[in-house]
Image (tube, rainbow, N blue to C red):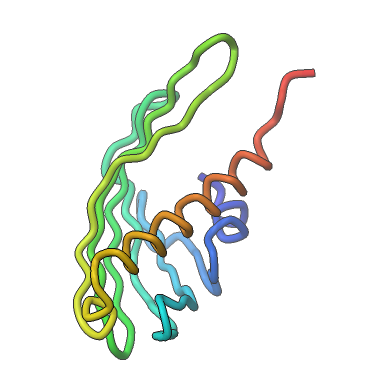
Length: 127
């Protein structure tokens, strides 16, 4: 939940700063297919159950597109290892939506994977 750590793990993140209780202002430079741009929006923590669930809601827009997304990160401990799973949904409008669900889903999976790989690399591991 440290903005500096999260900023470093969000692909294309140019700004990620607190703007209210459980709310962050964000700006990312991303590309989906051949459409690239800068997107600004907010990330709101909608649910926080320490060590079990973190709920998020994201809204954003750029010159050509808009995005609304929500999801939950689940933390499950098994054999001394914490596993994170994510489920959520998103709605994309504008030029990016014209690329089709396959391109959007593949890009989304890649970005989410890169985020969680980065978070995993920053977590303390037992000696």
